[in-house]
Length: 288
Ligand code: PAF
Image 1 (tube, helix red, strand yellow):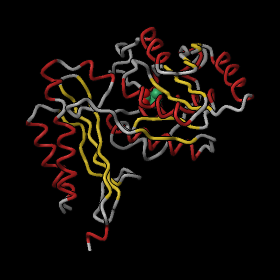
Image 2 (spheres, rainbow, N blue to C red):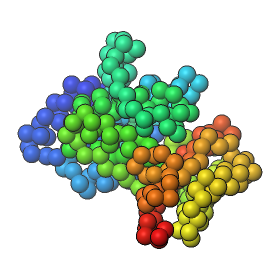
Image 3 (cartoon, rainbow, N blue to C red):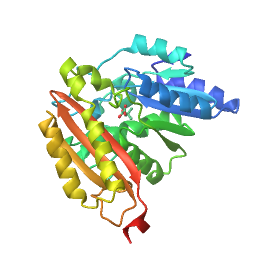
């Protein structure tokens, strides 16, 4: 595995691969590589000839009171793990490499509507930071396919939209969320949970599964079902940011005419913010 911090070095390696006819896949990350990232890499390796992982803790997507400074940075360990798991090129650029001398004056990318909802409402500017860095990373690497985790479902939809809208020649593939054996979605931020919080955390996904079962069983009062679920999670110690049943493409609150749904949730346990989602398809004919 090659490991480079300069974009020009990455471009030289990639140009050589392209000359050899190789297809290029990209797994963009902020590092602290865990099994969830490795699932993205595995899919990338299965589908592409040459696998690139980027590690960049993107300052633009953190709010002023968020954990940019404390975000786990484990480059040496990540490099070893990625190398063992067959990554071909690791690009770990500095902020200056990505944004130039004056990051505050650099061009931003904004995806309307999707950026404003849910995580976007509670983290103003977050998705502009994501859209901006992903546009840059995709331009640096120009992958045929980029692999993103479906745990960050809103981010996945947003990136798919920006790629379409900006006419990028990249396919965005969503990879199923990896979970601990008790159902907790894998995330770098799980490391922040205390032992008690870690024991409580799987209730989030359990509740999402519970609502999905209710919907499959015929429940169509979506606001009512979501509200009961929020109450149960609050009673279990979660501080809910949002939990709602939405149309899986627009992320607008679902109506009974929608057949592809996603239950989206974000909640704090102590100081740790957890997000999760569950997608389900219902047969509109069942409504008739
Ligand atoms: O999901 C992440 O790790 C980040 O938001 C991403 C897509 C790498 C952009 O910084």
